[in-house]
Amino acid sequence: MRWMSVNEVQARLPELVKQIASGEEVVITDHDLPVARLVRQEPERPQARRPGSAKGKLRIIADDDAHLADFRDYMP
Image 1 (cartoon, helix red, strand yellow):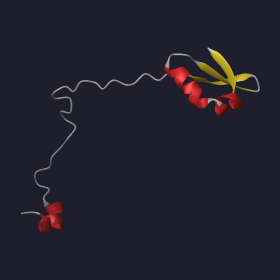
Image 2 (cartoon, rainbow, N blue to C red):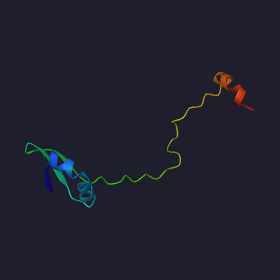
Image 3 (cartoon, one colour):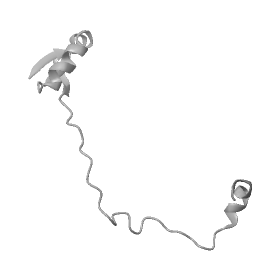
Image 4 (cartoon, rainbow, N blue to C red):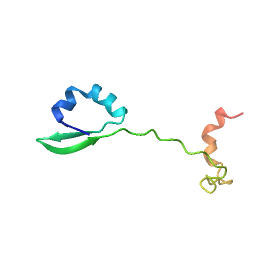
């Protein structure tokens, strides 16, 4: 873990991003007090889709055709 001032981080950000990507951590200090920590962000892995996982989240109202009147020119 490396400690660096805000000014140092601003001057060397591209270099630090490469180091952080390889697993190193950087603590950012302001007037010698730690204020933030830069760490590698692991990419989020998408969850596998499950059949039926959206069940009950969509409701279709069969009697609601009034809103379609605005689209009559576009419908066959």
